Length: 177
Image 1 (cartoon, rainbow, N blue to C red):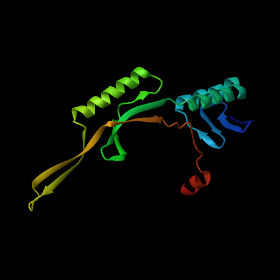
Image 2 (tube, helix red, strand yellow):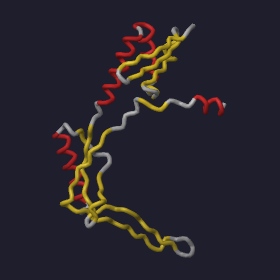
Image 3 (tube, one colour):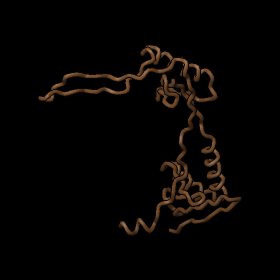
């Protein structure tokens, strides 16, 4: 048994890799000093690719994965500003749509508007309970925040990509063991 190790350097891109020649599940790779973070089955497939087809095929696949990770899906949702405070807003976290799908965005907009309209533009923000001497509830106060029906805002976001993660510090691992 011996390791297949190597690096590929090209226009600011340094890809390092290693794998046992008979155990594709031992494959590891780094890109510009950042560990390639993929699931076990994908790591095994990359190891198999290195063993069976060689360095060029592996580098081409890693580049394809990097390009795909750069094409992140963009999403949006809608919310409403708090009446009297233009810095605070409320939205529904579970309702969102891809920015390139007009029908999805329209559906999300209608659902968000209907949700706040049903609640008369009020959002429950906190509950205060006052207790008596024997720790029995004396009164319960619910606080609400009023939203501005004309204060519609669009919130854009992108899913975070974790394809590359920092390399573990080998010195710290040895000290801890």
